[in-house]
Length: 464
Ligand code: HEC
Ligand code: HEC
Ligand code: HEC
Ligand code: HEC
Ligand code: HEC
Image (cartoon, rainbow, N blue to C red; front, side, top):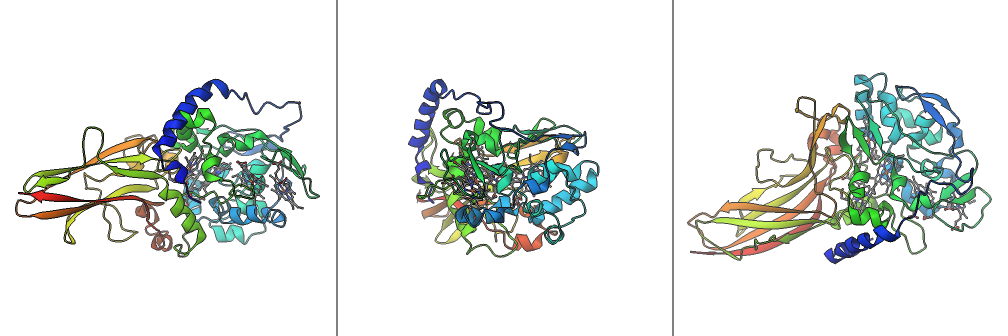
């Protein structure tokens, strides 16, 4: 799938205009509002102050395992099966962080992470603290849906929309889900579904709204905007107000047969084996190659055609986002998007910023010309930390959704050179800052790919 329709800035201009018009005409009302009392029923649960179930009307067996959908929905199943949603309870990086949270906050840590990474365990009150790694959980006798993490019924038994997870200093789980499992009903976006012998189908317009991705894709802690993909999207007036650029429009594109892509392609991959030849790698590569543009110059500053020897060369770029939220988004403090910039002459490197010797090498933190989109978590004293649940602040240096960033490099041209300079800029992305995987996840680091999002090359004449 190509995202070429987003490559044009005209599209964004059009969206902006549409957004302004649609403010008036898209008053769709509250889609949670049932037309009859029991049209969109839900089963309830209540939590104590540590995020543990006090009462629940749901059991794991109410949620159907995803492989029971395979025979009739093979495309949905196969796509979902290679998604990060299916990987949620297999992800060694998740288990590493989750173990750490349980050690530092024994009362709340187990529930806290599972509220988004394993909603069925959360709403049914199944504790998984005895599983220190993915293998022990996957080889256990737990119900299949518990081992799946985010399976079909985690989404398709939702009957109302949720809001973000907002956490206080106690760091306890409090996510609100609205589920009606165990009644043999699958809810979805098909208005007039063909009947089948296995389940009843119920059309629910909420499936075409970005809010269906809540509560998981929006998370605040102590007022800190920790992982706020939905909020970033919602802050883009054109995207949110027109209702025309939902999460589904980019992440669940319709195939010719009418079914929606269930690979949920993002930026991350199962790194436990080499990824370069996999279909999932191709999909991430395609998504990222439509994520932004690099263009030469910026308002009032042209890209130079020539420079005098001995002078300072200033090289300006505009980086324009084509993404419906910040880049990176979600766990921004783990990701890295940066510009690799070089100036060379006849193959000899004269200047570099963001150039790494191999895909798992760290970036030069002392490079004050480095253009890096990421974020840094801070503790109460303002020190840099890595654990999101300890955050009291965040320095957000991401590229805003559909926003632009101007960047210039300066280079002192040596007085003794003549001829031409070759200038090369590439925007690169990797799903992990190497230091996160170093040591405990060295095998994953060895497979970590760097993706190119966009590039620009030019030559500049030196005049004496
Ligand atoms: C016996 C075959 C069969 C099985 C098994 C099956 N489905 Fe379906 N499902 C269908 C058919 C047929 C439709 C209607 C498709 C259409 O109208 O295009 C459907 C529709 C749906 C819809 C759309 C409902 C709507 O109105 O939007 C969802 C969601 C769904 N199924 C989920 C599931 C899930 C989840 C499972 C496994 C737990 C599952 N199905 C198992 C046959 C099946
Ligand atoms: C029940 C919680 C939940 C819901 C609902 C949910 N997600 Fe996710 N999503 C997650 C979690 C957790 C992960 C990360 C799993 C992992 O990598 O371990 C994830 C991962 C992803 C990724 C891959 C991110 C990457 O870095 O590669 C994409 C894309 C995504 N989700 C999109 C969506 C969209 C679009 C929706 C709504 C249609 C949605 N999700 C609904 C919890 C959820
Ligand atoms: C205009 C298209 C577009 C829209 C709309 C959009 N996305 Fe994305 N999404 C992208 C692109 C491109 C990337 C890869 C660049 C990046 O990571 O930001 C991405 C990446 C992601 C990731 C991985 C982020 C990371 O860096 O770890 C998640 C999770 C995600 N999207 C979820 C969502 C959700 C949830 C919504 C709706 C609230 C949404 N997206 C709306 C295009 C879109
Ligand atoms: C993270 C949430 C999520 C998960 C997990 C998920 N779906 Fe969906 N599914 C959706 C959303 C949202 C739509 C509506 C997409 C649209 O119409 O834009 C949808 C649509 C559908 C439809 C209607 C036809 C279509 O493709 O538009 C079927 C059938 C379906 N899903 C089946 C499944 C099956 C089977 C699984 C598991 C193998 C599954 N889904 C897993 C969110 C999810
Ligand atoms: C509010 C819901 C929510 C909570 C709570 C939550 N996560 Fe996540 N987590 C997500 C979503 C959504 C993603 C995918 C975002 C993205 O890819 O940018 C994610 C991504 C991750 C990733 C990156 C996965 C990868 O392979 O790239 C790790 C690791 C992770 N979470 C660990 C944890 C741990 C540990 C906790 C508990 C301290 C936790 N999460 C709590 C929603 C949540």
